[in-house]
Image (cartoon, rainbow over all chains, first blue to last red; front, top):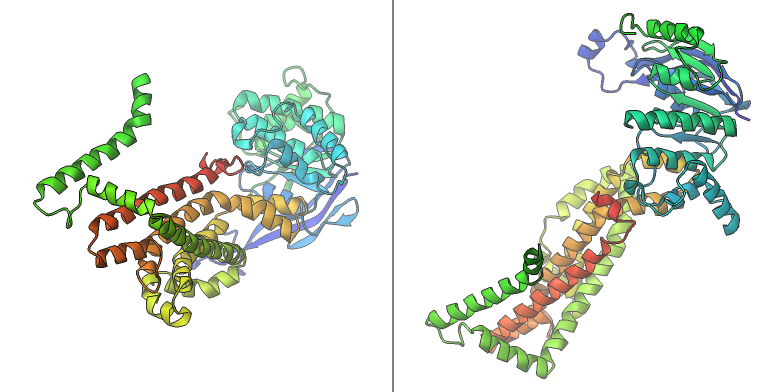
Length: 266
Length: 254
C-alpha cells in the first residue's frame, strides 16, 4: 500500500523575527507575520507511483515532503496515507535526506539494521539486512563506516536503510545533490530499477527537469512561493526514456521549462 | 625517508637528554651548592633512594587514587547532567548563569571550605579535584549535545527511537568526539590540582612529598617528585588518547 491523498494543504511559517522593514519589502508576509509557503495544494498519488516533484528553489517542495512524512505540521487541510491521517514521523514513511543522513558512528551494517530493531531473531535480521545491502550493490562494504565510502555509496547505503523497513512511502529530498554527473546518472538508473522491482510509492524531490522526466511515473510542477500546483502529469512512457526518440517527451520537456520560466536556454 | 623515521623515533628522547645536559651545566656553573640547585646526578641518586625505600611508590599511589576518585566522580555526574541540560533547553536557560558563575572560581579558592567541611584526609583533596573537573566537563558536554546535527534526531524519529534509544544511540555517540578531548583536558587539570590539594591537610601524595622535602631542605627530593609528576602525567594522557582510536569515535576527526 502507499496511497497518498493531500487535500487543501496550506502551510504558513510564523516569522517571529520579521522586522517592519522586511514586512514592507516582502509581499509574501501578511499582517500576521506569517509566510505562506503552500497554498491549497491538492494532490493524489497512486500506490506504487514514482512521483517527481519539481519547482523553483525555495518554493516549498521540501516542506511539502516533510509535512507528508510527518516531520512538520500543516496549517490547514489534510494529508492521508492509505486513508490514515499523518500525525508525526513513523517508520512506515522513511525519509532519505538531502545531506548525508547515515549515522556516522555506525557501520553500513549497523545503519541498515536501525529499521530492524524489532526483529528478535538474529538470523532473520542478518538475512534481511544482507538482502538489501546486496540490492544496492554494497556487498563487501558492510563493515565500513560512512566516511570511508564515496558519496554515491553513502546514498545507496541510506537507500538500503530506508528500504529494509519495507515502508509504505519513500521520500527522497534531492538525494543526488552533491554527487558528480556520472554518479548521478547511475543513481537514477538504480532508483528506477529499484522502483520497478519493489513497486513502492516514492516522492522524489528534485530541481533537475530531465531527471524528473526520465525517472517519474508522475511529474508535479510547483509555482514559485506560495507554491501551487502548476502541472500534474502522469508519464506512461517505458524506460529507458529518450528525449530524441520520443517527440511527446521532448514537447513535455519544453513545456516544463517554460512553466518554470526558462524560454531560450533549451 | 629512513632518516626521517629514525628522527621521529629517537628524536624526542634526544631532546630529553639535551635538556638534562643543560640542567647539569646550569647546576655546575650556577655557583650554588648542590643543596640549593641539585644537578641531575644528585637528583637521580635521590630518586634511587626514594624508589628503594618505597616512599615514591607510596606517594604516587596516594596521588593517583585521589585523582582517580575525583575524576570519576566528576565524569559520572557531569556527563549525564550535561546530556540532560543539553537536551532540555529550558533547563539550560535556567542553569546556565549559575554554571558560568561557579566555573571561573578556582578550585583552590575552595580550600578553606573544603578543610572545614571534610576535615583532614583524602576527602578535601578528592573534593577539590572533583570541582576542578566537574565544570569543564559539564560545559563541554552541554556544548557537545547542542552541536549535534538535528538531522540525526530526525533520523531517530523516523525510525521510531524511544527516548532511551535516542540518548544511547544518537546523543551519546554523537557527543563523544567533543567530550573525549574534554576528558583529556580535565584529567590534566586534576593532575595539576592534586599537587596543590596535597600540600594541605594530608600526609601523603606527591604534593606532600614536595612540601615535606622542602621542610627537610632536600631539594633533590623536590625535583624527584616533580619528575614523577611529569612522568605519570604523560602516562595518564596516553591512556586517554587511546580512547580516540576507537573506530566508532574516529569519524569525528574526518
